[in-house]
Image 1: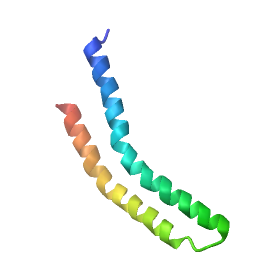
Image 2 (image 1 turned 45 degrees about the horizontal axis):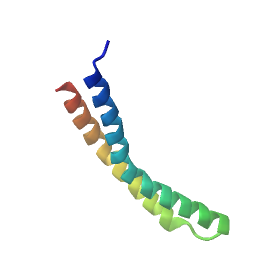
Image 3 (image 1 turned 180 degrees about the vertical axis):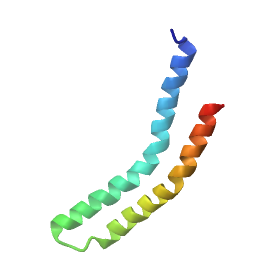
Length: 76
């Protein structure tokens, strides 16, 4: 049976993870909403799509580094 300390640590980790991922999700939400708004209006939506593409490239570039750091921390 897991101890109370382990359960509390895992709950704090979940809260910390959600707080760390929130700043990464907000720009995607904003630019996605703007692209949708422009598409409905029939205007050019290249600017928000370029920004969404830049966020995607940044995420794909940094994801292996973040995963390696997470595995390293998990093994300690």
